[in-house]
Length: 234
Length: 234
Image 1 (cartoon, chains in turn blue, red):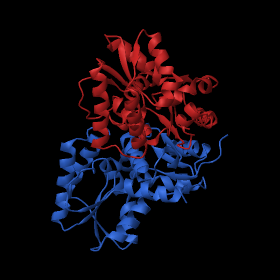
Image 2 (spheres, rainbow over the protein chains, first blue to last red):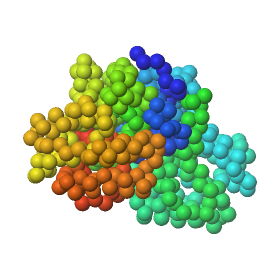
Image 3 (cartoon, rainbow over the protein chains, first blue to last red):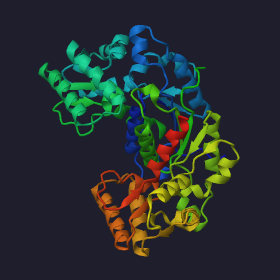
């Protein structure tokens, strides 16, 4: 067996969805200061997209995704993963119970994102673009409130447009019309005086490149990538 | 444990380099006919970029990467991988001996690429943009010859430019100047009457999007992605 490399082995529980996992892994590679392959992080990715639909589970009592998560975490830990990250916001409703059992260091996308917003925000009001399931589970609202920040949600009609956008990205539609729809949703929040917005769904993260909006849009996938690099190279 | 999903589990031995692995995983996701997450392939990726430099090993007797490959394949097989693919051309000099021992189905990027070229090519002459190490190992030339095709290599000066380009991509430089340099290398082959070219290095694959050249450029990463989808969904 080769010696352990210079970084701790990062385990990524992905597949939720696959495009968001590609996007996160891309951000992780780009966030790593490296002049050659050997400077990069050692990574293992478990991407089983057959995890039951999180929205259906959170909103309508659909099949519990926990056994799929436990199987993925077990595979990653079996490979020697020393840090666990999951580039999907909604699934964080189920994760703490699964990862606690492993004893492996877990970086929560929710915690690092709220910490990043807390440092940057001055008005105390933070827009939250999240899926219906994540909003119903309420973990982002709770984490923002604990940090003294007030979440601002889109109108009911805009929330429905957001959910259609998420399904578009999951079906591989990530073109100019999807980016324009996202810009329109952000513009509505701007009209409500919200200047900092969390793109709290990794499918939305996929659309952020080249988006031209006046607000500060915090990308949890990017924040998680930076924190993962920092901790893995420690 | 959840039931096995609709696809066979694909094991990707990556990290050589990390950017090329992101590119291949992206191509794999895009090549999958899917309207929702659950239609996608189940994938596990082992990406240890600390594998010793393949060029140094193939050209100058540098450290043998085989133990790193064996460790990665062992991790993937331990996760239950039923198909193995490796999105790096040069490392195929070392792979057959490692994967044969596992008994798991292996899709060689060399074999599927030469098969794809054989179907498309009419002149019998095929340009080969590969690293010094891959050319010295000679597996692409041998596979092309076995298919009745004649490999055409860049001039010595152009081959040096190609190697600089590969190092650029490994260091994260993938902008317009790198794409323009690749177009220039392809233009030289066009001057020699070569109308089909294999971009036989996954770092070169990364540059192919939006490249405007008159030739047919075969991207082994794309060919491998399509074949992986076909076999995994069988």
